[in-house]
Length: 110
Image (cartoon, rainbow, N blue to C red):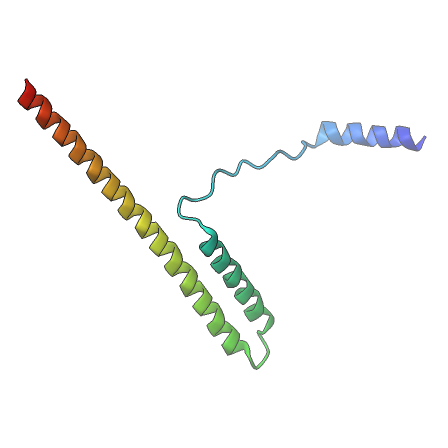
């Protein structure tokens, strides 16, 4: 009796509600690394601490810790992003130089 009821409930739930699908999260951001992950953890920890300390005397200290953690995280992301853009620019320039050199050689051979 209980098994039949359970099977009926399972069938009703299956027909009326979709099953949870696996998330379609893509690959992580190209600038993400372990250092940024650690800084993000520290930032979230500082935010939770500052929220808990709202009506306490050490609220200003916790708020300053949060600001410092956010600054450090933003700087790390910006530095990594700038480094990635710079390296991509250098790779692109090198590729263009090789192509120009090849074209120049082909013109001189012809």
